[in-house]
Amino acid sequence: MSFMIETSARHIHLTQETVEKLFGEGYQLTVRKPLSYPGQYACNERLTIVGPKKEMANVSILGPVRKADQVEVSATDARTLGIDAPVRESGHVEGSGACKLIGPKGEVELSQGVIIAKRHLHVRQEDAEKMGVKDKEIIKVACGGEGRKLIFDDVVVRVNVGGATTMHIDTDEAQAAGNPTVGEIYR
Image (cartoon, rainbow, N blue to C red):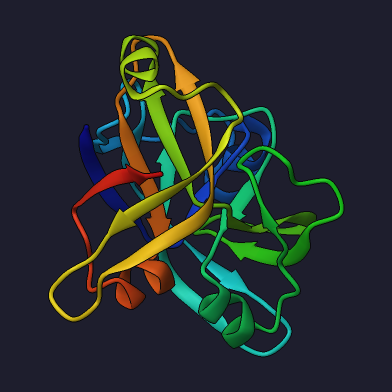
């Protein structure tokens, strides 16, 4: 069974408290466009990420707000910014990289929260049984364009209810595989 692969560029998840520090008291993020994962969206608002070596302006924020601030970058981005960002599953920010975020109304120093997102496959519960996979299982996925075919190992499965069956990789991974849009489990 094949599934869609999406490239996840650098982006930021924020708490409501941090949104207000960066954009002003009572500020609410606004929807630019919905994402493939139900309930998630790209926001109109953008921020600047500042690391020890460089900064990156105009970085997307994804909504809705979360319980913890999280900045997701590629390994290339982390190296460019000078941030020591570990490869982690989303939400696992304890002891991760630090940065400063600059918004139109303020700045916030994050002592942790910068990660390189571990490649993962979101699987709808009804598809998981058909595919023979379980939540948190580690799998391999075959994909790639002409002359760039490869097999991604160490892909974590995230079974969900009412979501989408889609693999997420970062920009470094996408470029290595010729910007794939379709993959399948490799056994």
